[in-house]
Image 1: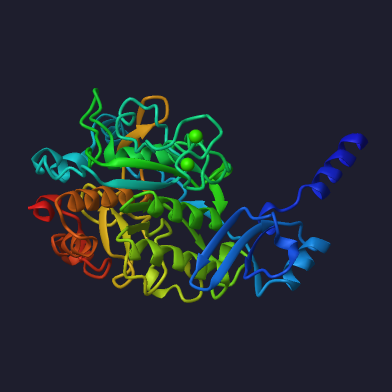
Image 2: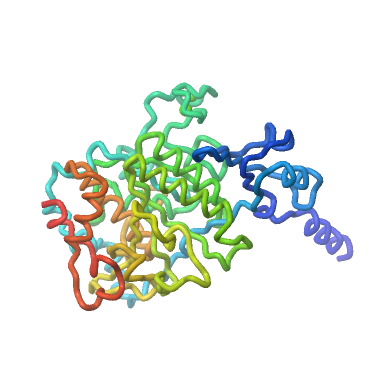
Length: 407
Ligand SMILES: [Ca+2]
Ligand SMILES: [Ca+2]
């Protein structure tokens, strides 16, 4: 027992808090940061470098003194999965029937406006790109030769075929969870053989960006790097079902890491890419989060961001969904959504996490119909079905309707 206790104590002492060990440096000057960059970002005249350094170490001191600012890289998390609120009978139904596919009349949508030619980046836990319903829906970096250890297309990433694994700092973005595969399926999955489940934009291509690693957490700077990768490699819609609240972390929202994220989203906007973000699952009003802001969905003044709440099959707000007449753009089906999971499976999941890729896919269809990014977002809002139940919940006053949107 004694040995065991000592071992545990040592393990405790030697296991540093990973999140305190990664730092964002603004305009580092000295030699301390040389050769240590995990990421580098340039915004205007400002250079940001992300490095690893033990807290309170001489190295950390050096980095601090030789940088304009130094802040901890912040942890980000997935929206926790929501338990289905339905009874056993409905639960059985949701295993075999994708209600959102009927509700939004996928089969009546114009086939030629199916997302063809539009790349949708899924910034999540990765994607099971071998899933039968996704294998033909993946974006592939055709200029890259796989597994030769060379960055053939000189985009800064070696052997990146389906996207990139920023959480694991490697080229293979295979899903380490199920969340990202589910989101990818909501966007573009080929029809299931055993149900009506399928993606909303089956002509679109999925770019897999793994920014959430073990235990459904990741680093903010990996999300920023993922946004850059997506935009620089041609994605026009970015689906983001992750977030962080200020109270969950040790950083101040006025800090450089918030700025870095905002600049990345602005960069996406400047390239005509739409940043779609989940509203979150805390039944909170995002219009009133001054005490505890959430990013990215709660960020104010980001005109190119679309924030999505979750609706149910009764077309009311899901009881977990965040909302906000000003901050949340629109609602979409997000409860008991049947979609792909790794290993050729299909399962229902609930959350604004699921509503978000549905809107991302819908926007991809709009872009494939020749709409500009701005026009697509505007029309998606205008054609949403407004109702009293939604009037104070989302900007659009209701949930998306794809027939009028694509008409
Ligand atoms: Ca490459
Ligand atoms: Ca290669």
